[in-house]
Amino acid sequence: MKAQPSLAVNFDAIEAAQVRLARTIARTPLVRSATLSRSGAPVYLKLETRQYSGSFKLRGAANAVLSLADHGAPVRGFVTASTGNHGRALAYAAKPQGKPAIICMSRLVLANKVAGAKTLGADVRIVGMSQDDAQAEVIRLVREEGWTEVPPFDNAAVIAGQGTIGLEIVEHLPDVALVLVPLSGGGLASGVAAAVKGRRPNARIVGVSMERGAAMYASLMANRPVQVEERETLADSLGGGIGLDNRYTFGMCRALLDEVILLNEEEIAAGIRHAFRMENEIVEGAGAVGIAAILAGKVNADRPTAIIVSGRNIDDVLHRRLVTADPHRGAA
Ligand SMILES: *Cc1c(COP(=O)(O)O)cnc(C)c1O
Image (cartoon, rainbow, N blue to C red; front, side, top):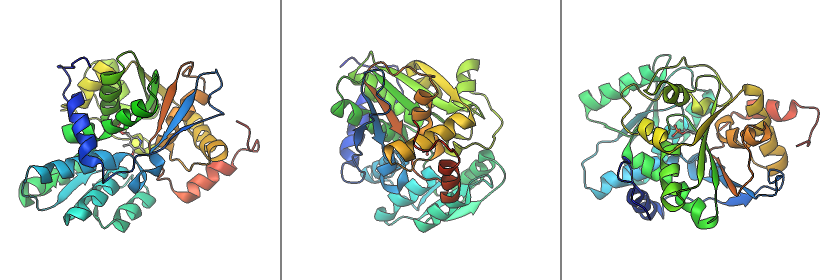
C-alpha cells in the first residue's frame, strides 16, 4: 500500500479501528441491486441501515469511546451536539462502558430523533435554533463540568471509525471503482475515502449532498470552511455546518473527494421511494442520496459501484407519506 503521509487520519488508524470495533458494531451486508445495475456494471448497497443504532454513526462514536478506554483516560461521561444519529450512536456506545451521555440538540431536530436518543438512555437537552447554539452548550459542559466531548465528525477517532465501512467494501468487492458517500460534515466521506483509496488508489469517491444547505460543498467551492444557512430538508441528517475552525474533514475531503453532487428534494424523495419499493429498505433522506444520485442521472454507475446507505432513522409518518405519494407504484 502507498503511504498517505499528508492525511490527518491514515490507513493504519482505520485498520486499528476495525480491530477495536470488531465486537461492538455490525459488519453490515453489501447487497447487489438488480434495479440500479443497469449499465451492466454491478451496483451494490452498503446497508448501514442495518447497523446497531440505525446508522453508521455508531462506528465513529464507538471508536472514540473505546479509544479513550484503551488509553485509560478518566471519563465522567460523554457529551455531543448532534442532529440525531450521532447522539443516538454515542448513547449506544457509552452504555456498555457504564458512562452517561448528554446530547445537546437544536429545536430543528425532528421529534423522532429526540425520542430515539432518549430511548437509548441519553440525557437530551434542547438548546437554541441551530447546531451552533447546541455546540455552545457542549463547550460549557466540557469547560465547567468536566464532560468529554465526542464530536460528530471533526475528530480523528470518529473519522477512523467511519472509515471501517471503506475497508469492508474493499474486502467484499475488491474491484470497487466508484463509491457514493452521503456528505455533511465529512467524517464519513473522509474515513471511507482514506480507506478505499488506501487499497484502491484509482477508485473514484463521490460525495452526495442536498441543494438546501450543503456546507461542505460550499466550503470546497470557496476553498475554506464557510457557513451556509441551515434549511429544512428531507436529508435532515446532512444539515449543519462543518465548523469554521474545521481541523480534519475539510482538508481530507478536499484531498480525497473526486466530485460532490447536489440533489433537490424531489430527487431525494425518489431515492427513499426506490429504496422501499425496489430494495425493501426503510431509508432516511440522508441515507438515500446515493441511490437518488443514480436515479437522477447525476452520476454514471458504469463500473463496479458501492453506494453507502447510511441510515434508517426517518419519522414513520413522513416515510409513509413519501412512499405512498407517487401513483406509479413500483415503477423504478
Ligand atoms: C451524519 C450522517 C451522514 C453524514 O455524515 P458526515 O460524517 O457528517 O458527513 C450521512 N447519513 C446519515 C444517516 C447520517 O446520520
